[in-house]
Image 1 (tube, rainbow, N blue to C red):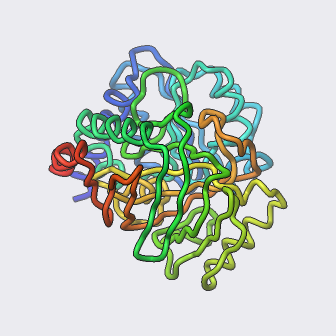
Image 2: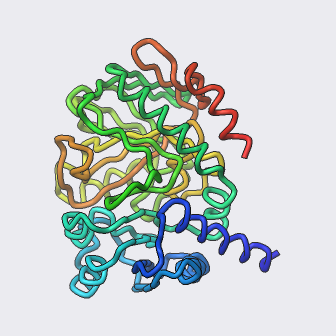
Amino acid sequence: MLGYLSIEVLESAHKLLNKIMKVQANETVVITADTGSDFNVVEATAKAAKLLGAKPLVLWYPMPPHVGKAADPYLPLKPLEAALKNADVWIEFNKSWLLYSTPWDRVMEEGTVRYICLVGMDSDMIVRTVGRVNIPKLLEFQRVLAEITKNTKKMKITTPAGTSVEFENDPSRPIFTEGDVRGPGDYMLVGQVDWAPVEETINGTIVFDGSVWPPQELGVLREPIILEVEQGTVVRIEGGQEAKIFEKWLKSFKDPNMFKIAHISYGCNPGAKLTGNILEDERIWGAVEWGLGNQAASFRGKVGAAKSHTDGICLSPTVVGDSTKIIEKGEYVHPKLKKLAKQVMSF
């Protein structure tokens, strides 16, 4: 079984580089990993790069206890930044992500690197969410979903766990179809469409009932974490012990922006399941994910920088946009999506 899986991992890594990242011969592919990464995936990706005629370079270091800019003090900043700035492609497999860190900021400012965030991806996940997925059909679905969202002004999201939140969208802000790599810039794993709503219009209750990460003490939730949101800011957190851990972690940064809603996303990867790895959890078919804290400049929002970032998952949502249902209880029901959804799910 292990030999069979290793072949599928290599095949999936080759598909990632060839079909998604569009790696060309002689390009430099830098792969970052920490001690929380699955080194089988790292090695397979380096091999796949070599098979494509590219030049792989693996950067591996101890896993920081924090993510984003909070990880800076634990990183070999100068050599890391130098290597990444001179790469053509950057694949991030770190468990504690470099996304939103100072090196990430500076590399993205250069505007020459094709970067994809695949934090904590393991062998099983790369096979299910890349290797066995019809990438062209999934990207087609994501583009239609993004277009529907871009043309929607007012949205309301409810869930069986108690989420009831409303907000408005700004049509001038981008809607990202993750994994649709078309040139230099930052990308995420396929199976996610994300954007930043108009922050001051976000009001109501958000209930995380799938998973939350970071902090590292959390993952798949045993009890829901309830966030009361006013004008895009979390003003109260309720729930059990996990809610207390989450609130304490947010407060530890002494940064008011850690309580700001940074973005929202739909999950639509047919191979994703709830595992506690936030990279995969936020791509669960029909789920909704909310990000708090640091907001990438590419979202064109109003939150800006924060000392870290976290994501939480709402399961089985019903999403209504301008009185039309987009998702109902975790299933895509919009008339423009129904047929495509069946094609994507028959992978």
